[in-house]
Image 1 (cartoon, rainbow, N blue to C red):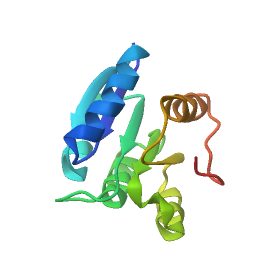
Image 2: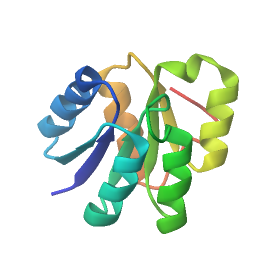
Image 3: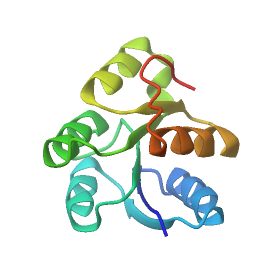
Image 4: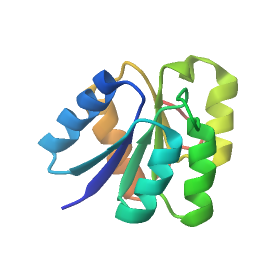
Length: 128
């Protein structure tokens, strides 16, 4: 069974992502800030991470950097409402995320992004 770390300070968006991924038999680990995400990544080493950007304690960019310093092969997908700003897209991909989605996204967009990333087809030049 594959595992996913769902990182978002919004319980609502964590639940949406969790519901989608549970349909596809993912074991879900949740974190509500970037520091908690980093700590849980080390413990659980999930197959995929969905990462919000705007969060307390440590934002998504900082968390991405910490996770990738621990595991350069981490599969991180940014899922943020901030994605309409080009600078956030560029910064997230430069930080090492393999794809990005703008909230709100569809179930198919999330699953396609995860499938692409897990199959080694990261979407560095596009955000869905």
